[in-house]
Amino acid sequence: MSHEMRADHSQPFLLPPSMEDWVPPDHPVRFIRDFVAALDLKALGFRERPSEVGRPHYANDLLLSVWLYGYMERIRSARKLEHACRTHMPLIWLTGMHYPDHNTLWRFWSAHGKALRGVLRQSVLLARQLGLVGMVVHALDGTKIAVQSSPRSALHRSDLEKLHAAIEESIAAMEAAVEAEGACEEPSSTLPDALQEAHARRAAIAEGLAQLDAHGQKHLMPGETDARMMQQANRTAWALNAQAVVDDAHGIVVGADVTNEAADFGQLGPMLDVVEEMAGATAHTTVADAVYRSAHQEIQAHEQGRGVLVPEHGRDKDNGNPYHRSQFEYDAEQDRYTCPEGQVLEYTHTKPASGNKPEARIYRCRACKHCPVRSHCTTNKTGRTLRRDAYEEFRAQQRAHRETPEAKALMRRRKAIVEPLFGHIKENMGFRRWSARGLANATVQWSMLCLAVNLKKIYARWKEQNGPNRPLPPSPRLAQRRSHAMHPLMRPTFRQRAHPA
Image (cartoon, rainbow, N blue to C red; front, side, top):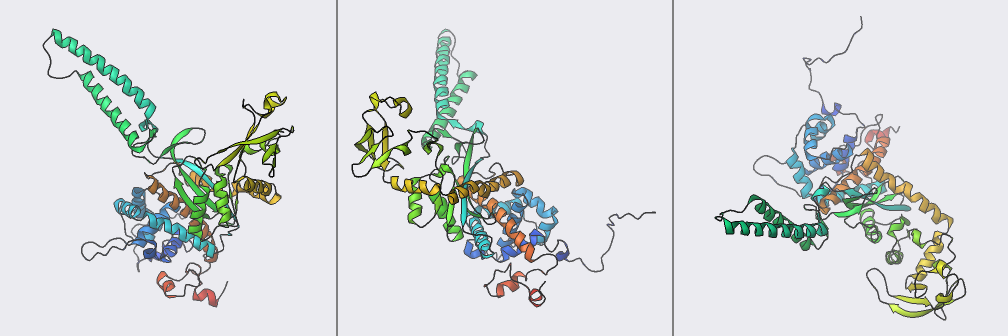
């Protein structure tokens, strides 16, 4: 007769069970506890809340630990976290059988947005200390993530103006009908229901146009005024643009930010500043996609000693075209260009700076009218025109650098460095839509997602050095008393030093 194991809920305990037995020695929740214990929360900006009277408040380290573990386990809702604190054994262990509710968790989140971004910076610094960041090659890219509001609630100026004109005609027709009816019958003290509804619709349309005027936009999402219409997976959606910089060594996110600019053009310099702030320095080479190409920002990065590598746009490549701009020779002494057919392009005028474009000298060919290959060279009726600005020599240097085998290898590797991050966040972590409203809250949420990615990679190193066959690192209190020459997460215990594995 086989013996089967079943739960015996009447089993008494001679001694009370220990909380340390509730989770395995190498469980991620223990790593979260040690990581938070090593942080200086006050220096990061977490406010202390003294409670001399009333019920004691939940400590910042407890609430931060709950949020960090929640993001590592795909639990990002305050209500779901509240439920998990009562049902998930690791969180019950982490909180010490305290059960913060969703209001407490959300108030902590909303009050410490800047401090939470500081925790991401601490993870980058810790990863550098553990040798997980090489600082040799960084890859930059962005991804569009949709906002939580429905696109049906968006306001579009052209549509509202058409509706406003139509409703004005409808109201005028109904008012004329009411006046004609009132001349024949005894006038009523109230307007017809259809006319009242038309007036209400006109007021709603006027309010929508007023919101567009107040924000200076042609398109606006009420409640998500920071959102913009962006191209996302072959469709247009209301979204925000999440940016990330990833280190080549172990995939640590060393820079993260969110913008409402639909185009990545102009984000190269700001993201390098973010990396400088978080990691303390930029990599030897930062590789970006062609959409980040900006001669002004590339020159600025070069002057600051930051190595950047951005490929050319498809429209900038010659693609075998014998009359591409690169085939025209410039004579600096005579200040003119010569085309492949031997015709001269003389200087005509200087075009002033406009927006991100610097001042440029314009050169035009006067012989295009009778040139036999004109149809292959240009469609401009006045002749082929070339533009030359102060960035021309820098572009030529960069073009030569991109042709080197090393640069080509780095540009090919860029996708393998940064794009897996977006796939992991969207597919494995199930994050495809912002659950927080506003650009500021989205920035905090993106930082927490990248922080969760970094913590998983650091946890793998922590688990490797503190596996089940080795004792755990010292308790947080003991670690705080010791020297800070080595991070508390990696500092060996007395038993490890005396009996190394």
